[in-house]
Length: 195
Image (cartoon, rainbow, N blue to C red; front, side, top):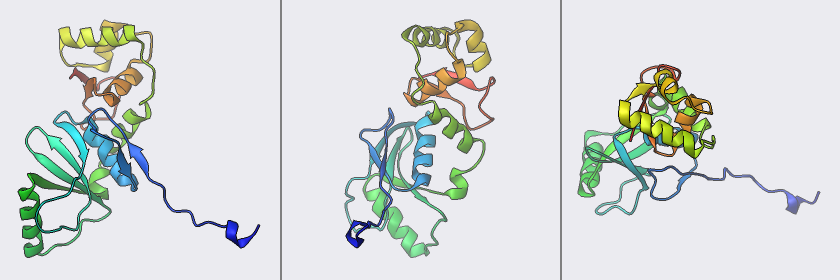
């Protein structure tokens, strides 16, 4: 093989796409993917978007904007949170506030907190699980009539033609249902609610 045929491989970006995303979000860091998977499952987050140019003095941050019910947050992800002086933190907060944002900084230990970390990854592993129209309608009707309920209760009411836990995870990835993934391991007692 000639020397000119050797190429340095760089980490190629992948994309994160979810029902709350206004556009695909480039992912260079696995921690950001995990954080976005978790954010997409939060009922309080209603939109996820790229960070557009900020007004005012430049701030050395990259991130994604999470539009929550209470405010818009700049989500930044890092292995370990940076140490900032009070002056630096004040400048950062003012720059974000001028753009209608608040800071949500998450490090690896935050993102990998259990059971949320494992649950969100498991939910997203069913992203492409096929759920028939009939099962979708039965699940939606049961949640509409009975309100939030556990997977096992929902399964008794719906009698789906598929694995209900997998179907609920797939529907959560589509933004059709909410799953309580932060309190206990994903399983028969996981609470499902309609959007």
